[in-house]
Length: 190
Image (cartoon, rainbow, N blue to C red; front, side, top):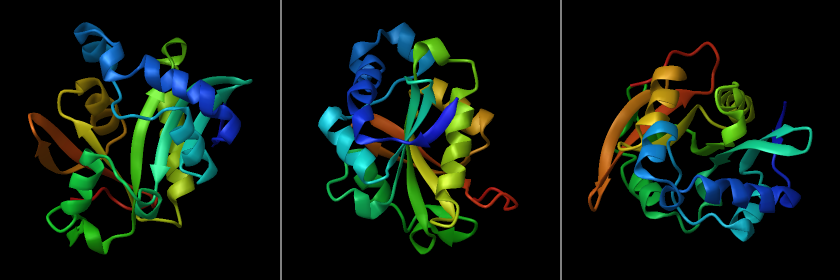
């Protein structure tokens, strides 16, 4: 498996993978078992993100096995509502005793793994690639996970050891904010 930055040419395959795992494309049971992604990431947006260096992919000899977003705040001039809520909460969210706003950080996510590759370490490989890519650029990778997305919560918090920084609500949807240190020897924050 090759973990690399996405290229503009990956956009159609990334859009297909994203659409197949979108909240609205899945049954309630599928969402509970495998998790889901949200938002409006079509081929054009994904192409633009790839051109900005904001996406990593897992490439299995030309087949897209997964994707992961890793973006700076500057690469999100019009953030979606959950990202905006996270940005607005930077003073109340704390990383290693400091307000998140005082810490160099990157948005982590969305993460999507193709059905044929689940349970084969692809999410872990993408996470590890993201840590390497973020090292030197930021001290922490920060994600927001809808609390209803227990599959994602299990992977990121229970599996990867991401630390809970807080929560926020938008309408009737509650989100948890989690972070992972990009420094290999650093302990998790909170």
